[in-house]
Length: 140
Image (cartoon, rainbow, N blue to C red; front, top):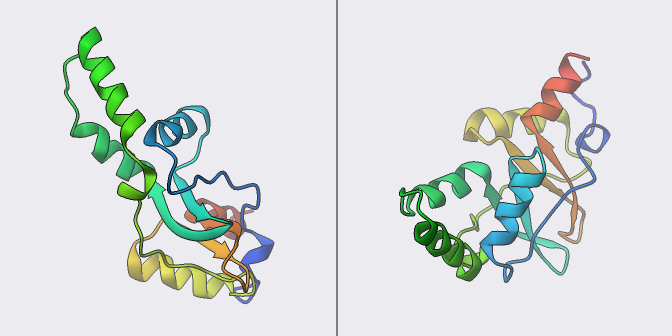
């Protein structure tokens, strides 16, 4: 494994993102339909936040636990009215495509992150690097 390889070589480039003004039901739909655990939040292509599946589950756990029709409608109404910008993590560590795998691994180890958006020199989303991407690289 070449620890000096740029993250652009192993990052995921087909990234699903949301905007800050979308509602959380869009995020809910993404997590239900795709096998992903992090959704970058972009404004005009620039990364302004991130929502993890754990953030989403914490939010859901604050809802009513009763499995009744009225409870489901209530929970759905909350997800439809809550904006992404009200839930997202705003302070996001980012990588650049030229950063090395070693730098990325350091971020993951020191901060216990599981995903880092990769941005170009203008701050626009170019990809995402996950611990899964690193493991695939290390063991393939």
